[in-house]
Image (cartoon, rainbow, N blue to C red; front, side, top):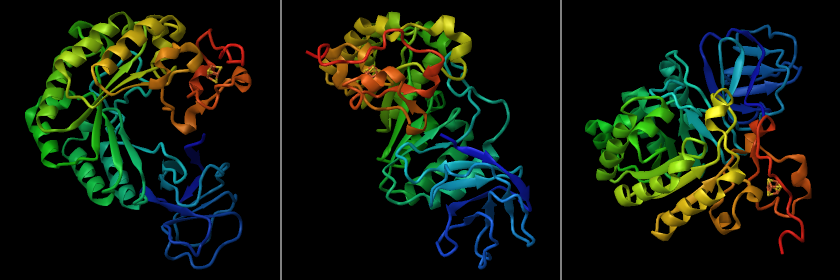
Amino acid sequence: MLLKTKGIPSGVNIPIVGRVTFNPENNAEILIVANAIPKYLERFRAILSTSVQSYPFDKPCVHSIPEIGHLSEGDIVVVNTDGVINTLYRINSNHNFLLFTERCNSNCLMCSQPPKNKDDTDYLFDVHSQSIPLIPKDCFELGITGGEPTLLGERFFKLLEQIQIELPNTEIHCLTNGRSFAWPALSEKLGAMSFSRLMLGIPLYSDFYIQHDYIVQAKGAFNQTVQGLYNLAKHNIRLEIRIVLHKQTIPRLLKLAKFIYKNLPFVEHVAFMGLEHQGYTPHNIEKLWIDPNDYGNELAEAITYLSDFGINTSLYNAQLCTTPQRIWQFTRKSISDWKNIFHAECDKCLMKQECGGFFASSKAKRSTAIKPFTANSLQ
Ligand code: SF4
């Protein structure tokens, strides 16, 4: 699915954030038109058009946009000065997230969105502080992601405060490596917000510090993350542990599950996550790839261990045909709709409705054991 398009800008001197509409009578900030020059344009901040013509009036405009069919009435976009139009919020999706920054202080072997070494924090803070008030108040769930969102510093808290005020009924899930919270002042500040709808999803890849630090390519990260988890727990922040499944995490998976139960029993949720063949992963594939069909026993042991001890546990990004049936109950349809696909053999599978399918990037690499369920194989 397209989340970005580009046309020829005219008079777009600063990034313009707004809801799009196809109807000039509607309440929105950005009007999408085809060819005709509409009347009553004054109240719109910008015009988007597939027409090759520019508009002969003083209004920011992007024309000659080749593809605009991915936008729906009420979607929130940012129109950039170079004519790029990024979708920030999709009205018809349950998988919306705000990218706070692409910078990061870790450099994980399997990062699906490798960090960029440019300071985008001013731009993204500005964009999100404009977009948050436009998000529908009945938005059920909203993600915050990066990079490492806490690298926004004080602005991280400002955006969280804005979300807390503007979207009081929305569940907020923030992905962070948790390292910043090793500094007590930050976790104390977050705790003082009493943001009960906020959960932090924090990765912990091993019970052994050297292995975790190797996976995230940052010395001292394990100690900082664990210290951060303790500091956050002290302030009653809701916590989730995330574990990506690959060659570096599988051998100690049960040990990690035991570590979590014994040392971090306060976490609300543990998510085991299938690998996404995206970002750094294709480059580190020799270090990372293990066929999901070959780690079923280790995974089932770790999941049942945590679940038996009362820790809420899930399995994300897994296909049922490569997952032991005894842990199917933990699988979730977790892949964001815009990158969730099924392959041809799935069309014949009787479990397709229940299965979470694949990342779009699985076209390049996936299990060799994908096999549709038939009436016989389900008996
Ligand atoms: S064949 Fe496809 S739909 Fe069926 S379980 Fe496997 S991945 Fe899922």
